[in-house]
Amino acid sequence: MAISDMALLKELPEKIRQSAEAYVGCVAGAIHVDEYRRLVENSGLRDVRVTVKGTSSCVGAETKDPFGRAFVDQLDEGQSLQDYVASVYVEGRK
Image (cartoon, rainbow, N blue to C red; front, side, top):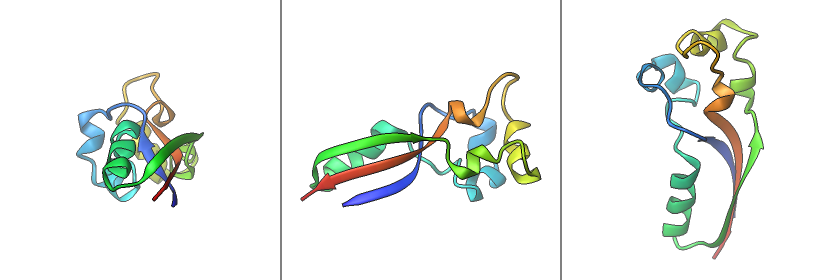
């Protein structure tokens, strides 16, 4: 089984977790990479691997469109969504 998804590298600031824009943009609803691994392992799959592939398209657009800039406006100065959210590839077998 393989899944391509977004996952958290570290906890999002509260103001982003509570943001409707971040939620519909797949950012606020993302779970931490370690939690993702645990859930997949608990589902009965083994040899689970989670590969962080890099910036997701949603995160990469953060400074190029108004929707993405809404996230940046909610971060502390000097922070980027790339510090928090990444595209991941999750693999496991039954």
